[in-house]
Image (cartoon, rainbow, N blue to C red):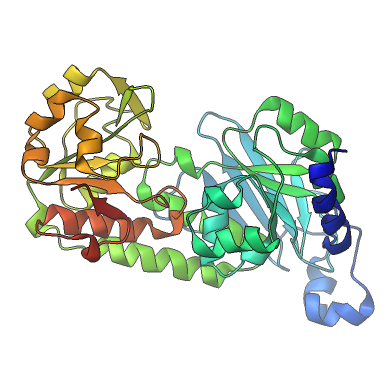
Length: 392
């Protein structure tokens, strides 16, 4: 084993919380009273009797069914026909023998000591007061812009196990982790390695959701896993209320372009049906590239001249700071192309950047839309917003 990992391995061996992905049966009698009611145990143990399905407003890529006795089934869809079923078994109850798919992931509560390679997942759990559920991460301390999470890594409460594409499987095995949450970028070789060491993997597909608020609704998935349904509902309701309460009147008619330029000089604009373009519209504005990449999410590579043609008259520019060259001043942007000097937004001082934590703080989508609304109304300063800052 590499020496640089020895210290981490020793810490994990001493401090790991034991988590079982597969159920071993009922809990001990002394604990049964606190984990499952006698009625549930007698009437529903090992059985799936449907109770209700969770109703969501924005999401398309997951569904949650609740069953009597505390059982839950989470169905996740990547949007391309690939589906995963997660069966959540209450502590003290048996695994149902019927009604679940053969390749379903079975998780017995309490679900603890998980690995998370998805920053939005960790951010949602942090916002729900459940950061302690994550003990392994593929983002080091320097990669985090959310203070509580950054500190957890620095303190050793979350252990950095290497990149998501090349995690340290020895450290993961030593931690006794049996469940991981990944982004949709999970590669086949990493998945195969996890299978070999007995780690079940759930992919968080919030990034393929078309509606901005759908990303917040993924809190429901983690609420079901960790029995934090109330916390999840509160988070979603609060952010939805912020978004739905926005006064769009003063922002109407204002246009904005959202883009970034890589260190190699390639320009990428958000497609017309991307969630960031939709955030501009929910804020009351108009997306300046509404005819670019119609029907597509994500970004599109554009030549500077083509981008200029579409966005030169936009009232505002929103630059995606963490994806691009990370400009600190307006001159940093102007140096990327002489054409920027002729942009209306540049001439009028309406160039804004997303903050470093923009893509991590999925729990604050409603607040981000409210910030865009504040900017589009005109006259905003950095003190008026949280997730944007002005290039001067």
